[in-house]
Image (cartoon, rainbow, N blue to C red):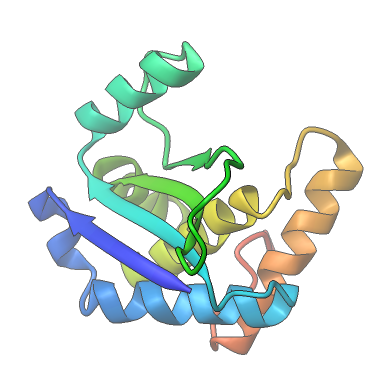
Length: 156
Protein backbone atom coordinates (compact mmCIF):
# COMPACT_ATOMS: atom_id res chain seq x y z
CA UNK A 1 0.00 0.00 0.00
CA UNK A 2 1.24 3.46 -0.81
CA UNK A 3 1.08 5.61 2.31
CA UNK A 4 1.42 9.38 2.13
CA UNK A 5 1.95 11.23 5.40
CA UNK A 6 1.66 14.95 6.10
CA UNK A 7 2.21 16.47 9.54
CA UNK A 8 1.18 20.10 9.97
CA UNK A 9 1.04 20.46 13.74
CA UNK A 10 3.81 20.37 16.35
CA UNK A 11 1.43 18.54 18.68
CA UNK A 12 2.48 15.38 16.90
CA UNK A 13 6.10 15.83 18.04
CA UNK A 14 5.13 13.84 21.15
CA UNK A 15 4.80 10.71 19.02
CA UNK A 16 8.35 9.57 18.22
CA UNK A 17 8.95 8.10 14.75
CA UNK A 18 5.39 8.95 13.67
CA UNK A 19 5.98 7.96 10.05
CA UNK A 20 7.40 4.54 10.99
CA UNK A 21 4.61 4.01 13.54
CA UNK A 22 2.01 4.84 10.86
CA UNK A 23 3.52 2.45 8.33
CA UNK A 24 3.71 -0.38 10.89
CA UNK A 25 0.06 0.16 11.85
CA UNK A 26 -1.00 0.16 8.18
CA UNK A 27 1.00 -3.01 7.42
CA UNK A 28 -0.46 -4.80 10.46
CA UNK A 29 -4.01 -3.77 9.52
CA UNK A 30 -3.57 -4.91 5.93
CA UNK A 31 -2.12 -8.23 7.10
CA UNK A 32 -5.00 -8.89 9.52
CA UNK A 33 -7.75 -7.98 7.07
CA UNK A 34 -6.30 -9.79 4.07
CA UNK A 35 -6.84 -6.73 1.90
CA UNK A 36 -5.04 -6.98 -1.41
CA UNK A 37 -2.86 -3.95 -0.94
CA UNK A 38 -0.20 -3.77 -3.61
CA UNK A 39 -1.94 -1.07 -5.62
CA UNK A 40 -3.83 0.95 -3.02
CA UNK A 41 -3.07 4.39 -1.65
CA UNK A 42 -4.00 6.08 1.62
CA UNK A 43 -3.19 9.62 2.70
CA UNK A 44 -2.76 10.62 6.35
CA UNK A 45 -2.93 14.15 7.71
CA UNK A 46 -1.69 14.61 11.28
CA UNK A 47 -3.06 18.02 12.18
CA UNK A 48 -4.39 20.26 14.91
CA UNK A 49 -7.86 20.30 16.46
CA UNK A 50 -8.96 23.43 14.59
CA UNK A 51 -8.26 21.88 11.19
CA UNK A 52 -9.96 18.62 12.21
CA UNK A 53 -12.99 20.58 13.49
CA UNK A 54 -13.19 22.53 10.24
CA UNK A 55 -13.11 19.34 8.15
CA UNK A 56 -15.63 17.64 10.43
CA UNK A 57 -17.97 20.63 10.09
CA UNK A 58 -17.58 20.82 6.33
CA UNK A 59 -17.96 17.13 5.52
CA UNK A 60 -20.02 15.75 8.41
CA UNK A 61 -21.85 18.86 9.62
CA UNK A 62 -20.39 18.37 13.09
CA UNK A 63 -18.50 21.52 14.14
CA UNK A 64 -16.01 20.00 16.57
CA UNK A 65 -12.72 18.14 16.49
CA UNK A 66 -12.80 14.38 16.75
CA UNK A 67 -9.82 12.10 17.24
CA UNK A 68 -9.86 10.59 13.74
CA UNK A 69 -11.78 11.26 10.54
CA UNK A 70 -11.91 8.83 7.63
CA UNK A 71 -12.85 9.91 4.15
CA UNK A 72 -13.29 6.90 1.83
CA UNK A 73 -12.35 7.54 -1.77
CA UNK A 74 -15.00 7.27 -4.44
CA UNK A 75 -14.59 4.35 -6.80
CA UNK A 76 -13.81 5.79 -10.18
CA UNK A 77 -12.11 4.40 -13.26
CA UNK A 78 -8.33 4.76 -13.12
CA UNK A 79 -5.66 4.53 -15.77
CA UNK A 80 -4.08 1.09 -15.84
CA UNK A 81 -1.29 0.73 -13.33
CA UNK A 82 -2.39 3.67 -11.17
CA UNK A 83 -2.84 3.08 -7.44
CA UNK A 84 -6.47 3.01 -6.33
CA UNK A 85 -7.07 5.59 -3.59
CA UNK A 86 -8.54 3.95 -0.51
CA UNK A 87 -9.15 7.31 1.13
CA UNK A 88 -7.86 9.93 3.52
CA UNK A 89 -7.41 9.83 7.28
CA UNK A 90 -7.16 12.94 9.45
CA UNK A 91 -6.01 12.78 13.06
CA UNK A 92 -6.26 15.63 15.58
CA UNK A 93 -3.27 16.07 17.90
CA UNK A 94 -5.04 17.77 20.80
CA UNK A 95 -7.96 15.34 20.98
CA UNK A 96 -5.57 12.38 20.70
CA UNK A 97 -3.32 13.71 23.47
CA UNK A 98 -6.24 14.48 25.82
CA UNK A 99 -7.75 11.03 25.28
CA UNK A 100 -4.42 9.30 25.85
CA UNK A 101 -3.94 11.18 29.13
CA UNK A 102 -7.52 10.53 30.29
CA UNK A 103 -7.26 6.83 29.43
CA UNK A 104 -3.76 6.32 30.83
CA UNK A 105 -2.29 5.38 27.43
CA UNK A 106 0.97 6.40 25.84
CA UNK A 107 0.77 8.77 22.88
CA UNK A 108 2.33 6.23 20.47
CA UNK A 109 -0.08 3.47 21.53
CA UNK A 110 -3.15 5.68 21.27
CA UNK A 111 -2.00 7.08 17.92
CA UNK A 112 -1.48 3.54 16.62
CA UNK A 113 -4.99 2.60 17.70
CA UNK A 114 -6.50 5.66 15.97
CA UNK A 115 -4.55 4.95 12.75
CA UNK A 116 -5.87 1.38 12.72
CA UNK A 117 -9.40 2.55 13.56
CA UNK A 118 -9.40 5.10 10.74
CA UNK A 119 -7.99 2.63 8.23
CA UNK A 120 -10.62 0.03 9.13
CA UNK A 121 -13.29 2.65 8.38
CA UNK A 122 -11.78 3.10 4.91
CA UNK A 123 -11.97 -0.68 4.48
CA UNK A 124 -15.70 -0.63 5.19
CA UNK A 125 -15.80 -1.43 8.89
CA UNK A 126 -18.11 0.61 11.08
CA UNK A 127 -19.56 0.78 14.60
CA UNK A 128 -23.10 2.02 14.03
CA UNK A 129 -24.66 -1.06 15.67
CA UNK A 130 -23.56 -3.00 18.73
CA UNK A 131 -22.63 -5.98 16.56
CA UNK A 132 -20.55 -3.82 14.19
CA UNK A 133 -18.85 -2.13 17.14
CA UNK A 134 -18.00 -5.46 18.77
CA UNK A 135 -16.58 -6.85 15.52
CA UNK A 136 -14.53 -3.71 14.85
CA UNK A 137 -13.21 -3.55 18.42
CA UNK A 138 -12.26 -7.23 18.32
CA UNK A 139 -10.32 -6.71 15.08
CA UNK A 140 -8.60 -3.58 16.42
CA UNK A 141 -7.63 -5.45 19.58
CA UNK A 142 -6.14 -8.36 17.60
CA UNK A 143 -4.15 -6.03 15.34
CA UNK A 144 -2.86 -4.05 18.31
CA UNK A 145 -1.93 -7.24 20.16
CA UNK A 146 0.20 -8.25 17.18
CA UNK A 147 2.02 -4.93 17.58
CA UNK A 148 2.56 -5.51 21.31
CA UNK A 149 -0.12 -3.02 22.39
CA UNK A 150 -2.69 -3.96 25.02
CA UNK A 151 -6.46 -3.94 24.49
CA UNK A 152 -7.56 -0.28 24.27
CA UNK A 153 -11.08 -1.21 25.34
CA UNK A 154 -10.06 -3.09 28.50
CA UNK A 155 -11.56 -1.07 31.34
CA UNK A 156 -10.38 -3.34 34.20
